[in-house]
Image (cartoon, rainbow, N blue to C red):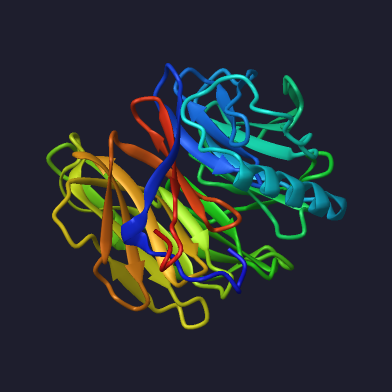
Length: 369
């Protein structure tokens, strides 16, 4: 959302579009232009939904579940194309479902996307192609590759997985740059600091490592251990940073499950931990109303909100404002929300539903009804 835009009104959040797929969805991300919503599914596909036309395209190539999606930054010459697409989107009626193109939509600019799957592979895509196919495949991790992120300058790719490693790759050709070792449990998520000099990685036990990308050294650990529990009854660990995000000002958020009473059934409560990056001080955020489940996605909205989505006993989206530790508004989602994505313009968000629906919500500006 541009800095000059009015603040949003969470209480006016409404459904803008709903896209259907015949398999439960796992993750979702908007591309940097905001033209497409990409969603990953349990049938091993990635679905591309066009917000301008409603068209749906399947990206085929993975042979296991995909959770991680990341994009290279837009090229400078795409600015005019993005503006044209935005004009078309604003002038067009809301799209519900999928179908043929409405009118003559602008041609999408090239999009480079990287996906990570549970067989440990990374795939590079020309994601705006008519029928995208993988252009590069890298065997990145032994076991699940859980997440992938791209550096702000678009030169580095970070991945993490069940082999307890964090790895850096050259975005240009997929060659390995460095292995960051030190986690002692599955690494669930990675995110680049906005200044591009540090990387955060978070594991199953709630240990968040701060890596100096110049030296490859872990310079400190942050404590998100409320997002983990060992259940002696089932002799199992449950937890992990299911979602992670940096704010432009450097704050870091991790989300997951806390207060676990039954690891086998996943009985617990959603939670978000926000770190002041400079001091490392942590603040725990919780929903105002009782809810059993897990927070699967989190992000910072430029208007001063932390937004998370989760599922368990149904689906929810929660909004926190400023320094308040308790949510100020809740949106009920028709199915378990298994991920959250914030549109680059800040005026929409999306959730990936366990029922196969990707739902796009409009974030209404204050004073607009």
